[in-house]
Length: 185
Image 1 (tube, rainbow, N blue to C red):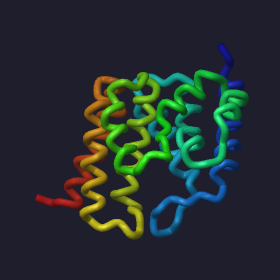
Image 2 (image 1 turned 120 degrees about the horizontal axis):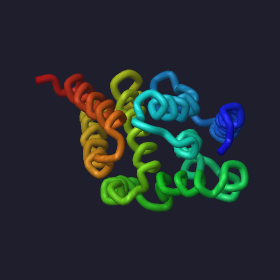
Image 3 (image 1 turned 90 degrees about the vertical axis):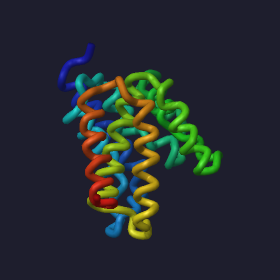
Image 4 (image 1 turned 120 degrees about the vertical axis):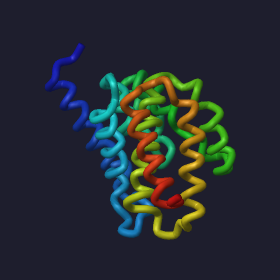
């Protein structure tokens, strides 16, 4: 078991790593926010809402899009952060060689079979994305596309339930809020 200072150093090492790896990426919002903001928000949601949290899950949350969206090799993550973190990152990584619709279907299908740590990361990631749909949506997304995205997240959410009541509560609130904003009764 490592001490608090070593944990803190590892978190900052991870932040430095992802800042470098995602340095040229931007979010799809109107102001093209730095991509790292999303990674930090996912980690923040885990710290804020998770019932309990293991350090490898927090580290993997910061790295969760690195294999999918950068030229990072799995060995880099393993060498820098260990096999447990690599396993979690691989568990939440989509196969970008597949068509987008198939990747979305696989997220719904595979959600119930993820480890509890991967489910926590997925819950926090979806919470971040839904929050962005409400506050800083992609510039070119129509209302219908936003509603379709929220409905898809709700389908993924079904397979993640029973993992972490705190994260689940917050995601449920965010989905409901987003639906109310986009489709008021």
